[in-house]
Image 1 (cartoon, helix red, strand yellow):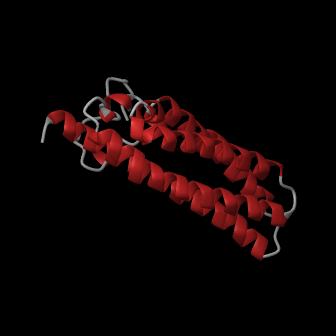
Image 2: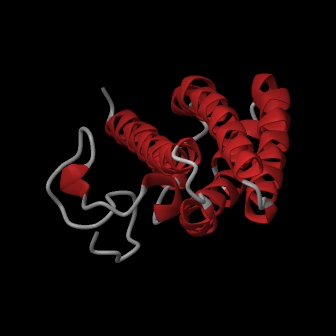
Length: 180
């Protein structure tokens, strides 16, 4: 296995691992909302925590994907339509975040949170199963180079915590100087 291919495989694993973190965090927040509604408690506190997290973590992640992963995948002819659809889903996700932030009744909050969870689960599966592997396969793309310093896409864990990575400090994808 070439050094570049190995680096791209580690980068792909980091993206998928970060998607898993995002999915798990969203699931915990949505569960908090739904549990509050089931207890006939006011879910606004849980909604506010979720909306804060969405603006701090998920939406910046989506924007970073569009400028890196999606831009590279769109240049691959067989991925162009998929990327268009993925960008459209980012708009749907942003609209659901707005709907959630504006929801006032427990039913509206629960419905928006659950819809967001369903859309994001499907969306992340397409990124993990269709886009990331195709970028790794493409001889004209270096996924590791695309992700250099892009903590929005791989998280900000030390390299030693990344799947298949070494023990160096930092993000492991370029000279960003992050120290983790």
